[in-house]
View 1 (cartoon, rainbow, N blue to C red):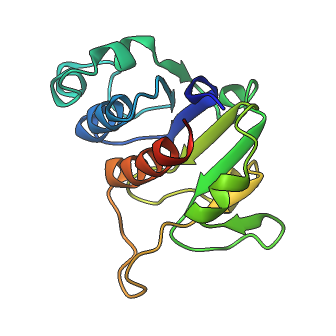
View 2 (cartoon, rainbow, N blue to C red; view 1 turned 60 degrees about the vertical axis):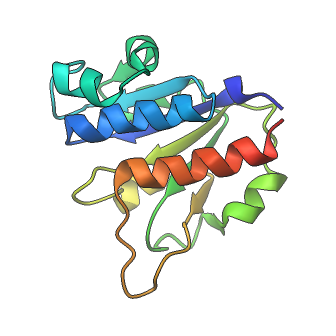
Length: 159
C-alpha cells in the first residue's frame, strides 16, 4: 500500500483558509496529492499559503482542473464524502470499510464545497460514498476537519 496513490480532491472550494488548512492536514499525515476543481478564490493566493503554514509544497505541487471529469481521469476508485446518503446506486461505506479498499490502485477522496457539499450528479462519479460518524442532529463538519479525519484514519491503516 502506498500513500502516493491517494489524492484529496476539493470540488469548488470557496474559502482560501480551508484550502490552506486542507494542504496542512494532508502534509500532517504524510500524504502529498491535493487536487482542486474550479476553486472560487484565485489559486494560489497569500491566504492559502499563510494557512497552509509549512505545507506550501503541497500547494505548489497541487493540480487544478476546471471540471470534475478532468480531475478523475487518472483515478481508479473515487470515494465521495457526504453527510447524507442519497444515491442508492453507490455503495455506502464507513471509515472501517476503508481497510478493504485496494490502495495499490489510485484512490481519490472527493470533498464538496463548503456551502453545499456534493450534488447527486457529482456523487454519481464515485464508486463509494463515505460518511464520517457525527451527531445525527448536527452533521456539519468543516471541509478541512473532514479531510483531516480521513487522512488520520488512512495513515493508521496504511503503513
